[in-house]
Length: 326
Image (cartoon, rainbow, N blue to C red):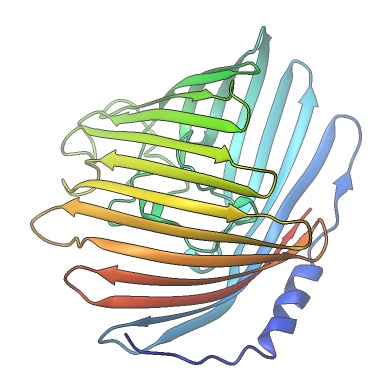
């Protein structure tokens, strides 16, 4: 492992400037509202055998528009993915009908049920994703289009969805746009009936056809327990045969510490164990990430992660991120 020293000056104030120039919250009227976030960061990576790389850029900008005319709610969001692309895309585009008695029906383009770690950076507790989402398998899907039926009460939630595809040959921001050659199915169950405990179990299935040369099955299980008002623990296991026939079991274990005051901490251990002839390597990721909450809308997050690969050495990651939400 190569030890690195990084000066943390100048660009930190620039990150604050980036965040503070985001739009303020706008309440249009009783039926329409708008919200979103702007996130920027400095990230530094050093991989064994390769030159160090760094970037100072926008991570993501999202603006979501919500229209509520009971019993129907519609959501459309515009998303700029930063270094992941240079085009603004329509991310969410769906309408939800409240059918009563805890049931709802949603149609359009929406986010997958799965994954312990959030899609939106402002809802994360660290900068990078753990192996279930960002490992060699990319087990956890993101956006697709379709229709879903959901139910929720004080102790139980579940849902079923028919989508154009669970995964996509194009990007994480949309499915393949058709059902004829292959179709996707998702389902989940979440239990919150015990105080301080949440348990989630989900399944996703892509049928063979189109861009999928074989059917794909993904299983996702996660849980979180609040040990006290300041400490919580969480864990996730995902198993998938997605992507070029690679089979993988990925996991994370997380300890969160949120004392009174502006600073919170996350300590995370994660790993991936892919099984494939080529193109995949087992690894462990060790992460520590503090977040400083300046206001209800503005936070500064840091992270150091160390990746220990079985066959290809190691990698060190350091980042500082500014997050503004409205």
